[in-house]
Image 1 (cartoon, rainbow, N blue to C red):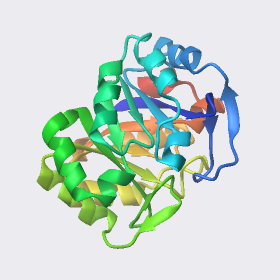
Image 2: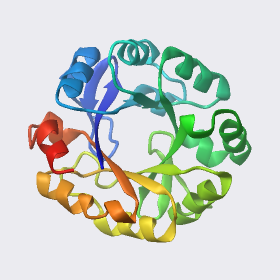
Image 3: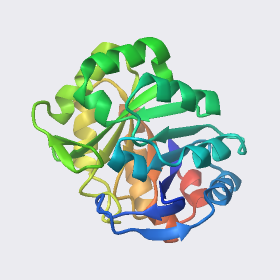
Image 4: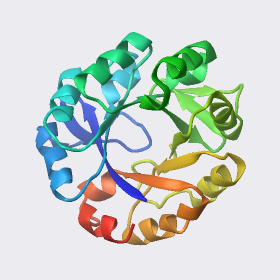
Length: 239
């Protein structure tokens, strides 16, 4: 199981939010230095979110993403505000290994189908949900017409092999992951899953590790690492 450190970018800084609310805590003003720190600790993949892009619908931290991707030796995935295939191609050309899609992928099935046809597994969809309700546009809007599990099944039907799932009520709270929801997704949808939201301790990592055989392949960790609850090296050792 991969332990994937998150780098959330806002106004050029590495920040963390709580449940997507815009009040931020700044942890670094040098994102590349942060990425290199996680690589030294053993990261095999870096997860970057452009929060400015998620809110505005247009990525705002492209230069930083490019700088990180071209100056570290592990793959980088990037999401936040990506609404067209031209932007996907640009990011891949920058050296981003995988592009994370959210709002446009959920709202526009034709776009999703076309993107998958062009880029296959170089894209991955992140479903950010409160209970079974998918949230879009920086978690400011809820999608009523399709539930979490139903949409995840559609991704499987389209040919996707992996999915990112974030419990928005847990994200940034250090209150522990939503194990019940993760188990339900793994049971109901035959996709490999990367889980995110609420990780607070090595015990949480251990509990998630037990779901590996059911298809949990990775865990995105943010605030717990930045607040020093444990080190990335420690988490990797038990993963």
